[in-house]
Length: 133
Image 1 (spheres, rainbow, N blue to C red):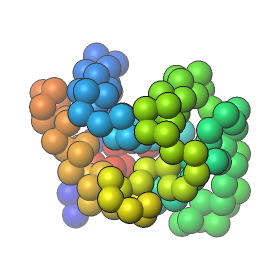
Image 2: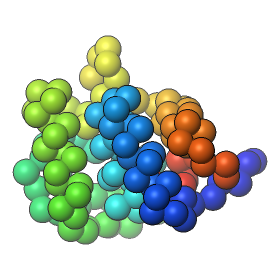
Image 3: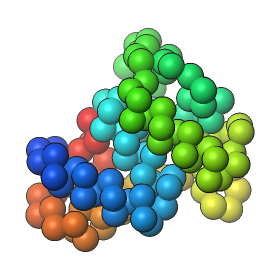
């Protein structure tokens, strides 16, 4: 098992945000929600548009622990959600839906997206889905 590191530099985080925003608004939103919520990737990928759109809080039961998690959405998250909904027109269904079909993207896609993005912006440390936490 490969150990991943958090991204400690605000400059690197901003560079990765900028890169992802230019590639795909969905992947940008996933990164923003991930780093601001601390949710595991399995919980992020289960989110539905109606659970986050025009909301001030997210409330869910964590898949791994079964614990209830309730937390406010930051202004950065709210803005990213609004941009995503406006750009895609998605009003319901999986928040992080695949381009073809309404199913959520996979953990593998998320890992590849983060890893490639980190590499493109010069992050040398091992990056994976747990990096978002």
